Amino acid sequence: DADVTQTPRNRITKTGKRIMLECSQTKGHDRMYWYRQDPGLGLRLIYYSFDVKDINKGEISDGYSVSRQAQAKFSLSLESAIPNQTALYFCATSDPGRGLDTQYFGPGTRLTVL
Amino acid sequence: ILNVEQSPQSLHVQEGDSTNFTCSFPSSNFYALHWYRWETAKSPEALFVMTLNGDEKKKGRISATLNTKEGYSYLYIKGSQPEDSATYLCAFKGDFGNEKLTFGTGTRLTIIP
Image (cartoon, rainbow over all chains, first blue to last red; front, top):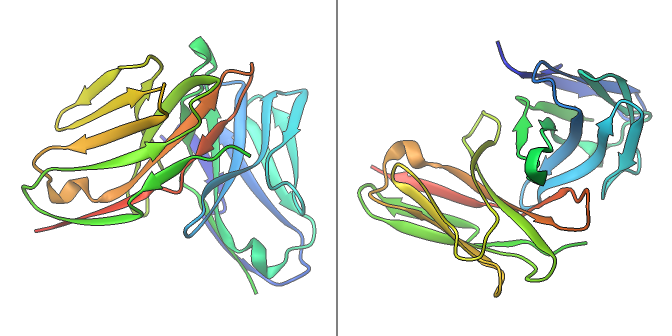
């Protein structure tokens, strides 16, 4: 079984709809992240959480919100989706041991906003 | 916003040839440099993490070097095989406590059989 899972894997929605992307992990890591990937732009950090009570904005948090329901669950919401939020979204976890924060990625969610 | 650059953006290499590409990052406040391999339709997977100037890591035919003083890392692939086709991402981590990773845009490598 995958250590980091994301649901849904693919989603097509319309402008203005509320969307939630979910991430679960069985790695036991405290740190979780949401990234989006756009062609030519690499992975950009949306939000991150270093433990259940810690939520932080990344470099592109506008238009997004998150919820850390438990150590194992970190959800990303688009309150009112817009077409330029069409992208591939990755959830990741990390173990801060030695401060290296090697990232373990989920399979990705491909979101299309029409 | 930290500047992490990778070059070239894409690369086509004949099977059996060796190749290398570059990751450039800030030379100040360095903590760690990560390399990830990202195959199409899969998720990125960690290849190497390097922390010390002069570090060299190796996994099979793939190796990486690190120069923190001038702010660059090279990834080398010896005797390229079709299964090496992937996007290779580097990520910089600074030393300001709980710094997040800043990813480069990647080098997309295609091996031509």
